[in-house]
Amino acid sequence: MSNGAFTKMPQASFPWDIPQTKPERPLSQAMERLYDQYLTPRPEDNDLFTSFKYTQLQGFDYNGGDGTVSRRDPSKIIRVNDLYYMWYTKRHTPIPPSGPEGCSDTVPSTDWDLADIWYATSADGFNWQEQNVAVSRPRKPGLGWRSVSTPDILVWQGRYYLYYQAFMEASGLKGDHCPVTMSSANSPQGPWTPCGKIVVENGEKGSWDQFSIHDPYLLVRNGQIHLYYKSAYGDRPEYLVGNGLAIADNPLGPFNKHPLNPILNSGHETTYFPFKQGVAAFAIRNGNENNTIQYAADGVNFSIASVTGLMPIAAGPYVADAFNSNEYGEGITWGISHFSDKTDPNTKHSFLGRFDCNLVPDSQVKRGIKPDMKETDIIHHPDVYFAQSLTAEQHLARAEKALTEPNLIHSSKTI
Ligand code: AAL
Image 1 (cartoon, rainbow, N blue to C red):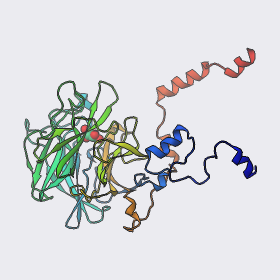
Image 2: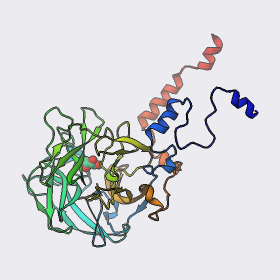
Image 3: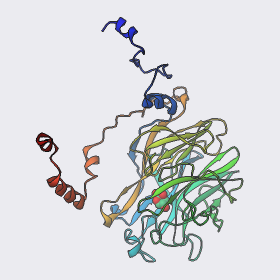
Image 4: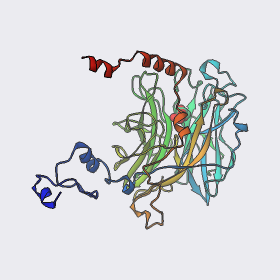
């Protein structure tokens, strides 16, 4: 076709090399969205797109993976005097979780039942040393007597604060119900003093967060403490999850819930970090927008910035500027997540592993960070797919259906 043929067309075709700005021509909805909704038309150029790499950690013992030891739900990671610190839920029980029907004073219902909060340190983020328990569950009827879990850290005016879930009954008996409490210390090594009260209350009766405040996650923005959290809501067998935000001027509260809550419509965990002038968030598992990374200039009104895959299932990133990023959030490049092997109910537990990613603003090259981990075409081993096998019932039902399905080709011939 000659160039002349093109000039006769009412509109030039969409260009060969993808334009960085929206071309002036009619666009399909998909191409409109590509320019209107995303930071850049190519994910490879998008500061808020990343793929993920994973590394097994050295330094943790799981009793041969027999399900009696579990480590999960790591906090964000902080660096103090050249050491990285993380806190996490640790369960060490005589037998693995037995469900709400099988649980007792010593037998856990879920993986995070009958747990305490422990901490570990590392010089390089790969080799970790488990240190000690940070917060033990108190005697009954103390707050969190049944289990304390899912911690996150705040450093505020030189003092350290751990926020965590405080269970007053075995998780699973009536859902996964709990509020959030807090312990504080002068050093990341403790000793930790429980504040002895609920710091983020469940919502009022009938509200989306009436039963649970999960995954507290702390940032400091504009001189105020921002606590993001998750709640599972709706009377459904499967979770409908949302994230909320509560803001305080003091670590003890009061934490005022944002009137626009929920502020994220998807995501089973909370992972937030200062990014440029705003806040970025992971929406991991559950919800229409799962597998996305989102951004809100005001930390409240989030939009999808990128769609990715194989996200860490419970990410606790190293956030260097979590508490002092008023100017320009520097993003994240690694963190710790838990991984759960639920295939054998007799050894059910979780373990900690490292993820690496590339979510730093355009200063990457200036800061000597190679613009890698921007691959969209991630090839998984076939085992990853076939691990998602049909259940025996699903297999049977589909096989039976196949025998009776209408033969469309045959019937169209006979019409
Ligand atoms: C996690 C978190 C919270 C829930 C449970 C333990 O992944 O969302 O901590 O309560 O599962």
